[in-house]
Length: 271
Image (cartoon, rainbow, N blue to C red):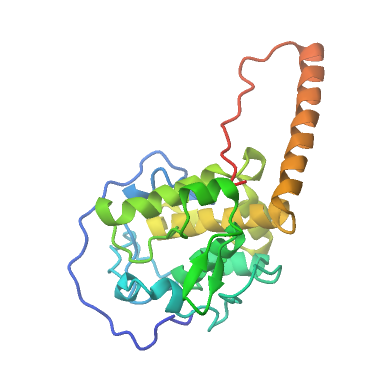
């Protein structure tokens, strides 16, 4: 049902990657799974850089490596925006690129891994330089730029899940997830359920799908909370929000008493 990013690339027959232990403690249907565990889930079989959901009854089979992504220039020369996914490698992100229809295409595997990466890179502040064929980090959120001066592969485009190859992608995806505040963790469910997306079934979960869902969730958070603001404006909004939260918490404690269980996980914001 979806157009392949590389129609001229033949199917490569290659040895399957070793089996990886599955996750046991997970609900039957999930809207996204934590990337802390996505390297423990096997992958679906595909011969292209995008695929449709034809998961066999017994669960997903191991993905074959995607050889074009092994080219060092793939991130700057690979095709983006050639199909139904609205995207330009140049310039800042647009509101059209961040629509819910776009997010639905990400989780339904109707766009390439490179297109998902490229959209997130633009939202993080990387800007493509056509002359040098490189990504400029000048406008990247400060805290993120310190750790990632070059845009990281947040998906694992090579689809090789050995530790030495996949670890950087896994860690960068986890860093992206940690930047999402608790109140925005379920954005994917909230915005895509009206479009008919009910989440992934346990048997169809794969590292690729999990990371796509995490990226889509971050993109919705970015669209709703960060898009259109400067770093200075975001910091001021954060200060005001914390002051309001502190006042509300002080009022609650005065009325109800101290609550030892009122804990929230830390958020490592990109700005």
